[in-house]
Length: 352
Length: 168
Image (cartoon, rainbow over all chains, first blue to last red; front, top):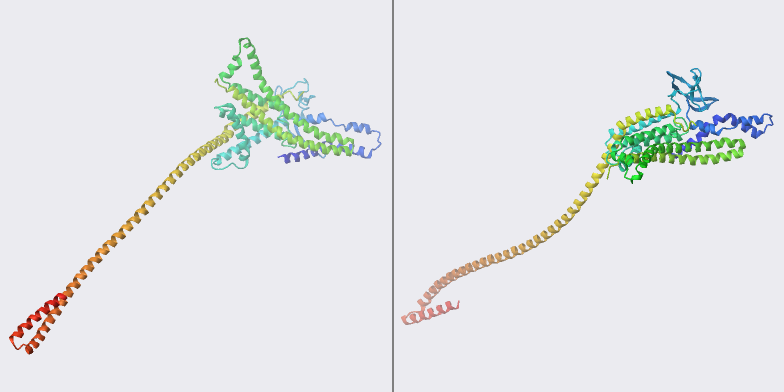
C-alpha cells in the first residue's frame, strides 16, 4: 500500500507539471540563458506561483472535476449545477452566465442580479466523489456479505475481499461489544459504516489522481454530517439514567442549577469536537503534502541546482508525509468510531 | 472563509447518500457478516470447551485404561499360575494312574506267569510221573522180583518224591 502511495506521489508532480509547464519553461529559459530581455521582470512576475491558490483549489470544492491539462487544454469532468431559486435550474458551470448566475470570491454560484446564494444542490466534485466512494463501499461490503451467504464461515476461512474486510468489521464489532453493552448489535452497523466510510474516504483523499483526490473527510460539511449522525444516534437512544445524569445529576444542591447547563453544553460539544477533529486532521495532512509538492515549483525559479536538490528533499518529505497520512487516515477513522462508540455506551448506561 | 462554513449542498447530499448507503448496509451488509462472525466465534468457543472436556475425559480414560491393564496383567498371572498348577497336577495324576495301571498289568502278568508256570510244572510233573512210572515199571519189572524189596523200594521212592517237591 505504501508503495502505491509512493508511486502516486511521484505521479502527482507530473500531473502538476502540466499546470505549470508554461511558466516552468519560461523560468528555465530565463535562468539558464539569462536573456537580457527588457521585459524579464514582467515575465518573472507572471511566473509567480500562488501556493495558496493551488492548495485551496485542491482542498476545496469545484463545480467541475479538473483532472489535468492535456496539450494546453483542461481535462475535466463536467458536472451539473443544480440551483433552486424560484424554480429548479440545471446547467454546467460554463453556462452559468447564460442562466443568470456568477461565481463569488469563494468560487460559489450566486445570483448575478441580487448577489445572493441560491439553494445550491449542485453535483460538485465533492458530491461526485461522495457518490463514487459510497457506491464503492456499498459494493465492497455487499460483496463481502455475499461471500458469507455463499460460503459456510463455520467450515472455511474467508478468502479474497472477505478476508480483507473481516478484520476491520470484526474490530469495530468487538469495540461496540466492549463499550456499549448487551444491546450492542443494534449499533454495530452504524459504527462499522462510519469506520469503513471514513477509512475509505481518507485513503481516497490521499490518492492524487482521478477517482481519489477529492478532499472529502477534510470537508467540514461531511464531518459535520457524520458527527450529527452520531449525535442523533446517541441522544435518541439515551436511557432514563443518561438523561437524569444530564438534567438532575447527583451533586450538592448549590451545583444543581449549574450542572444541567454544563452537561447540555457538553452533549452538544461532543459532535462539534468529532467534526473538527476529523476535519482539521485530514485538512492539515492534505495541506502539508500539497505544500511539499509546491516547494518543487517554487524552488525551480532559483536555478537548476537549488531546484533539483530541493526536489529531492521535498519528494523525500512528501513520501514521509504520505506514509504519515496513511497512518493518520486509519487513526482518525478509528478515533471517530471509538468516540462514537463510547458516547453511545454512555447513553446506554443503566443505573448500577 | 469557505473552508470552515459547511456548504448546504454538500450537507444535503451527504445526508442523503450516507443515509441510503447506511440503510442498505445496515439491512443487507453488516448484520450478515457480523452474525456469521459471531456464530463462528461461538462455535470456536464451544469447540474449545468441547476439546477441554474431551481431554479431561481422555485423561480419565487413560487412568481407567491403566487400571484395566494392571488388572488384566494380574489376571493373566493368576491364570498362568493356575494353569501351571493344573498341569503339574494332571501330570502327577497321570503318573500315579499310569503307575497303578502298570502295577496292575504287572501283577496280572505275574499272576498269569505264575499260573502258567504252575500248569507247566504240573504237566512236567505229570509227564515225569508217567515217565517215572514207566521207568519204574520197567525197573521194577526187572528188579522187583520179590515182594519185600518191592515194598522198600516203593517207600524210598515216595520219600524222594516228597523231598523233590519240597525243594521246588
